[in-house]
Image (cartoon, rainbow, N blue to C red; front, side, top):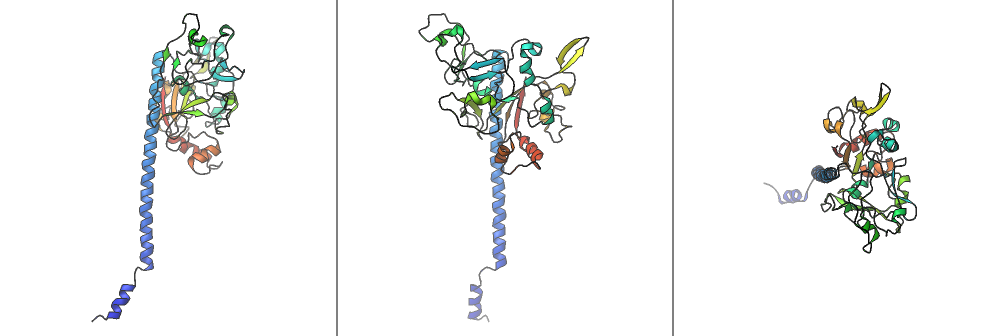
Length: 366
């Protein structure tokens, strides 16, 4: 027969230390699983948004190419060298500079300096993570028509009032030329009181839809006159509010989507005649972040391996988004560390860069 005192002691005993520790461990495991599941879902959502953004931009570039017969010109963001097309503001500072893609191609001597900047250099070959053949601003200017930069009137347009170089305040633009300028009608330049006849290109609406969550226009707080000297990875410097602002097309993670352009080929001399052409796979000049030789970089995704992807071998431009981690892989160490969430040092730099670029979203065209 069980005594009353024994029953009371049994009721007061409660949980043992082992039972409590086991319960805490079980809760920890469940929370860990939930955290991993939440992180995977968020990463998947970011990847989908990045792919959607790049798809919209690629469609805009294709529409531009179909409409005008050439891909969007590439703005000179920070690459060394002097492009042929330069837009100077009323105060004499460079506001807008574009690589020259005028007719004549790679053999036009006036184009040589620009085209050299669009080919892989020896420095790029030595350090594939230092390839800057891209622009953050081209897409906003030539697809959204958002370029409110004012150009200084030329001698022939001395009466011109201050109008944006694309002829339209805010979104929209007049017909662009290969050299990056726009065919703005004279009556638009001179104002409604002008008596001259209309001469210039047609007006176009934006070619991309920035109303989606995965794509947006972002006003960059930097002084455009200082852009050529800026390091693209050093962050946004303070802006002079009296100057115009450049606009970027950014993804859901607020990272600018990049537009790459390049020129394939190598110099060959036959019978005293020098040509620039592609004869072997090593003559391709695809930017490193867009495509590489898989044999040289084991682990390269198949769609970014120039030895496996026919589309890459024929491409001359690309749209690239940073993917879920928000890092392209070629940022400076401080920016890369901030975006990846851990300290990137010289010891783990190469692995961190390769891991960062692995989730990038890349679409190419020609």
